[in-house]
Length: 173
Image (tube, rainbow, N blue to C red):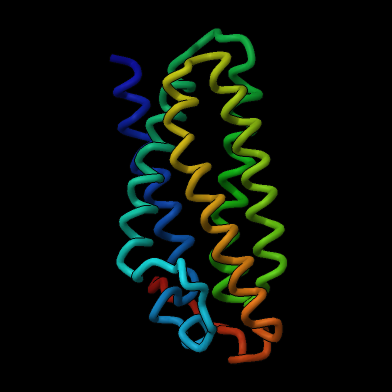
């Protein structure tokens, strides 16, 4: 029952933070800069991204709930710390890519997030294997996002200069 209490907190929290990060700057078809970019052939339709991220954030929330519920488990603090680090990177990616138009920096950030997520997965596996398996789709998506970002960089070497950076936010206070 304790896992469910954790999940009731972690899943909505991760969804909320992910949604907020995605709304800090216009993204996808709402972003003039992004629509002006040449995109790799493997770029999925726009509707795939919110569906994929919602699913992944739910899985992340469940994974972290499993680890948070493992009180007294050796390595739990490290595992949660690694998770937090990679998730902060995740939250920073959208403003970096869509807001600041820093394609190379966003590519480097994806690589860092992926490495941290691999470390998190190993740390989670030592505590609860199910939590580690819940991170696998996220790692696959990060790899795919990295390929898309690399493709955008190759097709748009001057991407940062296409449209001025957005100085506004989409979050109404």
